[in-house]
Image (cartoon, rainbow, N blue to C red; front, side, top):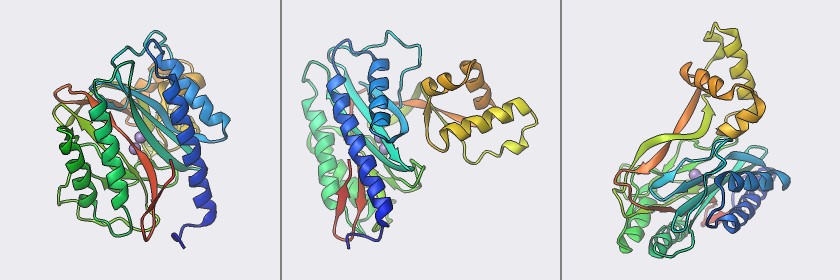
Length: 304
Ligand code: MN
Ligand code: MN
C-alpha cells in the first residue's frame, strides 16, 4: 500500500490536484502583455468551478517584488500585465474540502529572469526527490536553499510550504526554504504538503505591504461575544459562505452590498483577517514554484 489514506479521500485529492494543474496551465496561457488581472483571475476561477471543484483560495497574481498575496479587487478593471513583469500565478482548488495548491512563475514577453525561474523550479524538483516518510523538515529546507544558492540567488527565509487538512490551507506544519536546524521534525506517511520554494535577487526576506484583497474568517472567533446583532449576522453569513478558506473581496462583493464598509467593520471587530501583500524587503524580483504532494513510505505522489 502506498499509504493508509482512505481511498475516497485519496481520490478527492487526485481530482482537486488534476483540476488545479489544469487551471494553472490554462492560467499560463492567459499571461500576456496587456492581459487584465481581473480577467485572468475570473477566467481561472470559472474554469475550476466549471470542472466541478471548489475554490480553495482566490487566484493570486503577484508580480515582481511581490512574492505572494495579491488578487485584484472587483473594480480594478484597468490593472494589467506589462512586458517584463515576473508573475507568480498561485492557484487552489478543492474537492469536498481536500485542497490542492500550486503555483508557477512566468516572465511576460522577455526572458531576463530565466535563471531565477529555473532556480525555484529546480529547488522544488530536488526537494520533491527527498520527500518520504521520516524526512526531516530542515533537510528539505537545506535542499531548497542549496539549489537556489547554486544559481546565485537567495531563498526567501520567512516564506514556507505548509501542511493541509480538510478545509484548512495552513494546517500547522511548515516546510522551510532554508536549512535551519530548528526545523527538526519529520514528515510522515499521509501528510499532504504544499512545497513552495521562492528565489530572489533581493533581501531573501519578505515584509508586509499593502492589502491583498484576500480575507479569512477567523475560526477562533466566537460571534456570541458580539452584542451588535447586525455584525453577528454578517459574520455568520460570511463564515457560512466561505467557511474556513480564504476569500476574495470580489467574491464578498458579489454576495453582499456595501462590501467595503462591511469588510472594514468585520476586520475592525476582529472577525476576519485581511492578508497583506508579501514583498521582498529590498524590492528584489521573486520567483516561486509550488506543488502539492502526498507523502508515502517510499516517496511522495505529486498531485498537481
Ligand atoms: Mn500556493
Ligand atoms: Mn501554498
